[in-house]
Image (cartoon, one colour):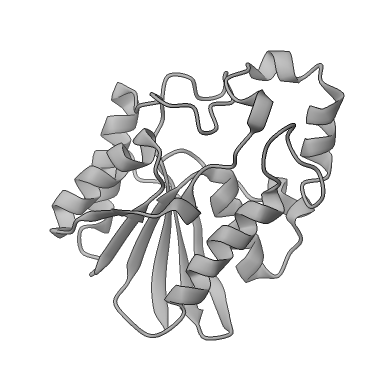
Length: 196
């Protein structure tokens, strides 16, 4: 069995206002940096032997203090990358609210996809392959990613469909824990936060 910690990046200044997706230059805010330090304190004794982060700046910045606390290097894992939101990238949520495709996306995550982007099922496939690789016995692993990618991983382990994505909260700088083994796994904890 392997312990896997799914960590969402800390807060940034566009959070809740702009659909950043894979937009470059989205960095942690002052609050996000404090959240990352709190995560590092929380995870310092977990015994992780591997720390992987998505290619986005905000995940690398979240992973850095965790790596320092554990004496690890941060590996970049493309499979943990944010969903590619295509032409929606960089648009405000207020603007997207008037788009019927946005409503469809939020009602039918299993089948809908952003214009010129990636469906959540594709993101689930990416993160699922990572979880499959980690299912063998070994030291704990920390994966730093994004809300919908973490939701997709949790839904996989729970055996729920992607349309149930909004039943799971994945807050900024939260940590969810999995126990994985070949052919299975379970959710040990969900959306835990540590105050900065």
